[in-house]
Length: 135
Image (spheres, helix red, strand yellow):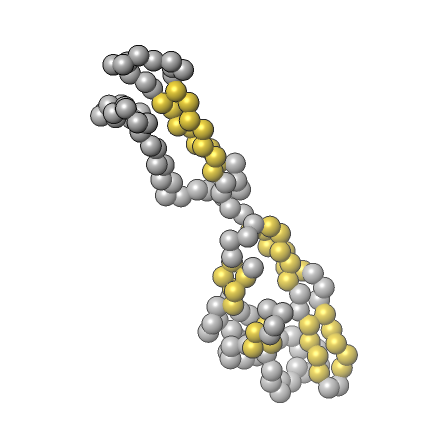
């Protein structure tokens, strides 16, 4: 999900909202919106790690008008990298003293760039790494 960034509220109020049990932000105040006037309340959120398409909704309520809701709007697509690894060796059988060539293939099948990728490869028992052979 998304998490409200404290101190990011601006518009009708810069006060942080109350976050209710349904993870809804609630601002309370005695604000007046004049006839034919538009006001904006802005805030920031941090995006969680769950990939998917998310929508937002908003509503207003007051003593002299009916509840108004937006319905699902403001779509946001959360994307992420998805790495896959495959390891192959050039010989299925070998003799003592032979050299084996391992190939590690990695790919990103996700929707976003994978940054700072680190690959850890174990060296099998009874073998040793040949320095200068990483290509």
